[in-house]
Picture (cartoon, rainbow, N blue to C red):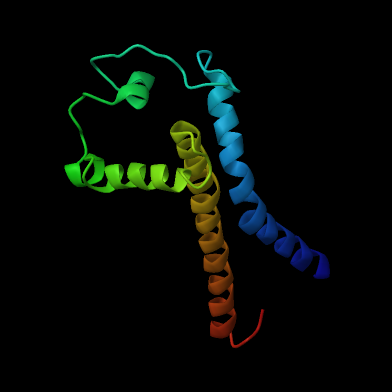
Length: 142
């Protein structure tokens, strides 16, 4: 019985702590590895022509002229999207006097470190609280 309990704890640790850290990288690698047109490691933003039917890197690099599919409160320059971009440029000034490099560093910090770190922390707290509540409901038995 001791071995089964140890295995359950080990699986729980893998699910809670390891899977959320590994899964995004595995998915990213899988998507990039199966797409022949995508370089796995890039040294610069891709240069891609504008298309009428969908957004491309041209929209990202030079601004999008397509009709938005989401409400203006999410995509407009005066609202969430524009505020996020302005905030990233402002934060970027703390990293570099070069506007583009500072923005890039701020973008990486916020969207690759802080936001995923917050989500990971909330994930761990959720599972710990769930486990504690189940233990309380079971009368303290685990």
